[in-house]
Length: 428
Image (tube, one colour):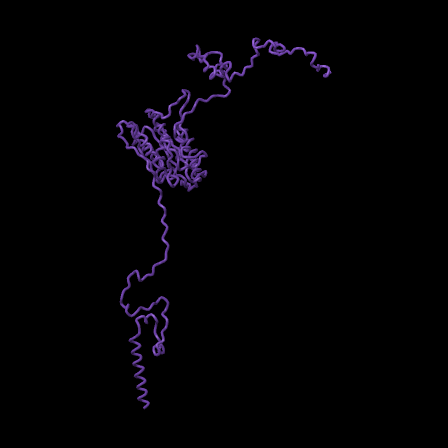
């Protein structure tokens, strides 16, 4: 009896184990091995972190990519604002040059390249002047390992045979200079010594060539430190350029305010307010490049002998002179008059050919001349409302029975009569 009961219990247990094995979900592989009691009594254990049970109907089915990953709650990235486009500036078409046109060689860094473009525009319709651009953007006197201007300028002069040379350099030179003795910080004593030597070698090559040299100063920058370095370089350049007979052209005031500080906008060559400098505070717009060339154009025209274009301002005073103001526009400057000079006509003699300033004839006696020139008002007409002159009464206006008499306009009363009391005793 016990044996049968034991067999029955064993069969029930085996059947139970078989059913549990069949009904176990596929996700049980994530739970780890189940114990004997768990299987016997159907105890469920929570899945480990990161494991999620899959419904039976989804076994073997691949989820779409959008359903596999939960969408992230991320804010959209802020786009960097694009740099503003350069204002439209009308560019002229360069006309063909004469075979014997005089050459203007432009050398220097990237600012010199902008200057060459401006000069091309300035002489676009001048067939007798041709601009040759030999600038190198990242070059300068410091990085002679990149481009040795002092060593290569002679080769350029021989190859291009220019009639004049325009130089603009120094914008890239705010960095350490390297020599055989080491590296030196900008504007240190060792830096200045090495830098001056390279500038002088460059200038000596230009002096030996024997053609006019126009050295254009560097402009102000938006950074105050950079502007201070540019002003320092201008001082260094000016003295050495003039020492070898070159012309130093200072353009600082054309791109600065009244206090000498950087400005991005200002009048162009036509007097219209435009953006002259780039958004980085270093480069120039097309309007700025054209204005940059304006300061050099006059010297080039004078040096070439082709003269200047017709002035837009006509002097009204023969003693007045014309000059270019800080805004790049022509302006008329009148004659300087001393406050201590003698008055006109105070000299003892007359200038030869001088005209007599007096007005002869009836014109000097006219009422208009006396009023406007001499400041004399015309006499009032008798009896008019503006006739304020007092006149003594005439004798014929006196009546026969009028008391007293008039002497020199004074009325003399008659002596008092007996019926009128005398006031004299009362006054004693």
